[in-house]
Structures are given as C-alpha cells and as structure tokens.
Length: 134
Image (cartoon, rainbow, N blue to C red):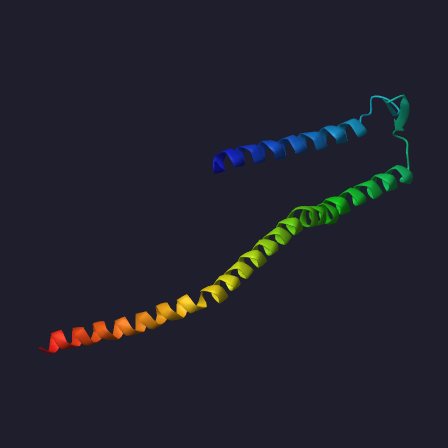
C-alpha cells in the first residue's frame, strides 16, 4: 500500500509540475504580440499588460491561499469534527447517567454482595488456615 501511495504521489507531483511549466510556456509564448482567449463570449487579452495584471494575479493567489490555509480547515473542523464531538459528548452523558442510576438502584444488591464476599472470604481463609496447621 505504501508503494502505491508513493507512485500516486510522485505521479501527481509530476503532473502539477508539467501543468505549471505548460502555463508558464503559454504565458510567455513569443509567437505573437498578445494572447487572445475567448471564454463564454468574453474576450481576454494577455500580454503587454503592466503592473495591473500582476497585481490582480497576486491578489487572486493570496485570496486562494488564505481560503486553502485558513477557511478550509475551519470549515472541516466546524462542519465535521464539532458535530461528532457533540454527538460523542451526548452519548457519554447518557452512558454516565445510566451508570449512575444503575449504581443508585443496585447499591443494596452491591452492598449485600460485598457483605457476602467478606463473610465467605474470611471463612475460606479460616478453613485454609486450619487445614494447613493440622
């Protein structure tokens, strides 16, 4: 299983690197003056831009990073772990209350059993002591 995980991890890392290099090559292609992208009847022109393009891209990457680093773990923590913790706490409270009620209701039987245990234990010790001394 570890070997399969290593193979899949290396393959994924290589695909990410190839995608990064491909995107870099597309953005810095010198075959024409600008790159023209048409997406849903909207035209986008890349190339020849100045600081504004890089500033927008930097802000977008920063927001995506904040979402991946802060928002996603909080959503997983509050959306998955917190309900499981609440359910576990409620179940623990129910079990504790049942054990408490059982201890209160069963205490006369528990005391009777303890008394019988003490009495029978002392007799067995006395019998054992008599048999070894004779």
